[in-house]
Image (tube, rainbow over all chains, first blue to last red; front, side):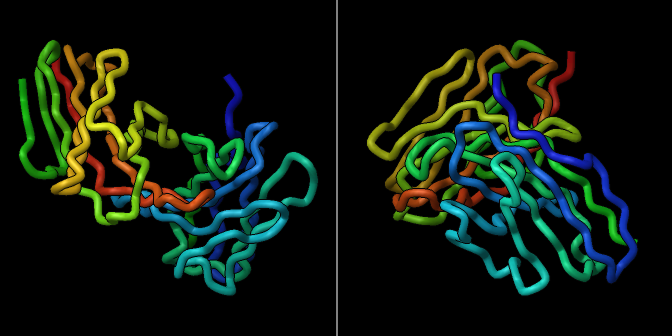
Length: 114
Length: 113
């Protein structure tokens, strides 16, 4: 069964450094998402991306965050200057069309900010 | 079997029992609801979903019930097995195409042999 894949599985970064989290959505999917999950809490929406532009974003997704689809397969989340509170699991998800269900999730990247 | 009237963060059951996990959703505009299972170190894994024009949907060993009057969703797992131990999240989706999922608080299900 096709999967959403994310790399790396664990990223350790010094506070203030830039970090890029990578995702390869399912190949025929067109709609992409980033969510995050702080340890022990619920999954929170960050941003959605469709047709090469941001479709929707949450309050969490401030100027420090950006997303990009640099080629036909990758979807990235960049945090420009990481803060301690950015430590979380970051999940990428995709869906085939804006109307299809469900969203399929990757296994996440654990981001640890020191 | 065990049942949970209100959302509880943890639920412990014996193998073979039936489990019921409850969830309250927030948005009357939501028309799609989904249960995900999250095992340790993994991402949310789809279990079962239901649209707002239905009250009940059954899968293999799992049933989802939707009560729109009180904005309540439940997941029933029949004959719970140790492999069912995980965190279970409900999520809702608004009617507009492409909108993000809104997740509820998770329930940690522990199944003992």
